Image 1 (cartoon, rainbow, N blue to C red):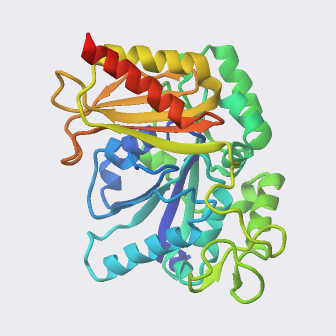
Image 2 (image 1 turned 45 degrees about the vertical axis):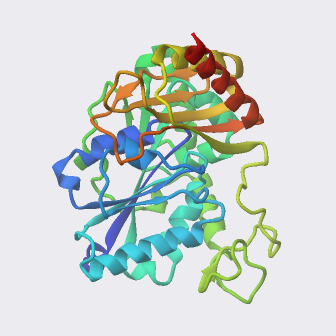
Length: 367
């Protein structure tokens, strides 16, 4: 027990795209008890935004944006944690007593957990803390039906938070909770924004215990550990063959992995960046029309906008057909004043979306 307490807990915040992970993390980081917490954020896309949306940038926050944690950057996750540990030992970053990983919404949580659990270096300094999963009350039932990753996120969770309950009716929320309980019958569950979310309560008893999970979750975790952390040289490793140490092996017993995106070729992320300030009304009309026409294929849209007449940026969020109210940030996170919008789509041509937005903005400038 004393040895376990000496290890730094690694808590995972997971949940499907747009379910409120960054909002939850932002709330938790306001708690003074988490002042000595390091944060790792993973994003599926070419431009990272979530670390800016948190409005907490310091040397203990590291952004991983080269891919999904469950796909090709397992080695990068391990390296990032080891780098933080080295900097902590050398007093090059403030001392931290906890590490929180916010995974991309497309991430299978089990490879992430097995990295901390099985990496021969990490397990001497870190231990698995509990897993907090967010579930979108508006889109959650459909996502659980379509996305296997989402079901795994719910099944492995030690704490469950059903978000956006104020945007749907009680009947739909109860149906979603019933579906969640089929996957995870025992984890404490909160409804947000109704129930208070306290960092101490959410992170209490934060030791990851597989014994309390469903039989399905235990099988998934066992399958991830068994045969997937082996010394190189006993098969064909998935990912970068130049990485030293341990490697993950493909499920087929040695075949090469499929590269950057294991979620299917149709799901991809892209960013739109533009220099000039935008008219909020014009942009709002365009985004509403886009989601109304293609909402089922737009898994996530988020951005920071330089809006005409506003000294600080405006953060925008959308999930499928739902557009959230804009958030006026306190200040620009860095010197870059360009608007940046990240889309994660399923089967949509990014060129058409970019052309559409450019046409709207050009119409405004010609008016």
